[in-house]
Image 1 (cartoon, rainbow, N blue to C red):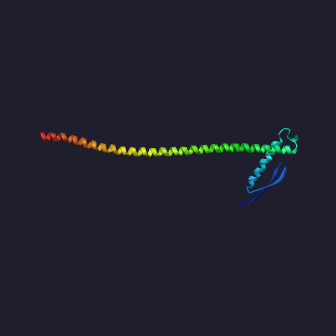
Image 2 (image 1 turned 90 degrees about the vertical axis):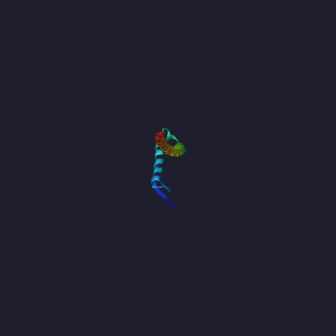
Image 3 (image 1 turned 90 degrees about the horizontal axis):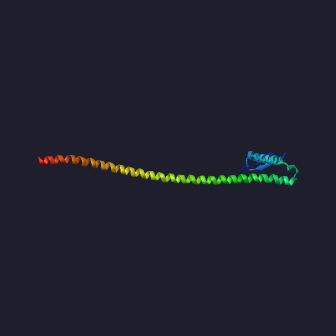
Length: 142
């Protein structure tokens, strides 16, 4: 089982202890994000005139906005990844089909080359026979 980590972080000018099974670096990153978001939101004009509950709600809404924007981007990237993986699958499938066609064409080429070689042998035999035949007919007429 993973060990629980605890780390002190400063959030909104207060020291808080964060605990969790994540690394201390991750917990520190969370604290830094929240502290940065509070600092960013508190600089909004009119923020200091809001009551405490409204200020907290405003900070929470900004964090939720960041979350949903990141989630939308992650979902979009996941869809793009899925599309790319499908394209890669299709390319691999096409590549395999083309390889099979190439192998089949190579076999046909080899078979045709054998046939050409056999036909060339027959042609040489027939040409040789044809050359010899006139000689034989000449010999017979003598």
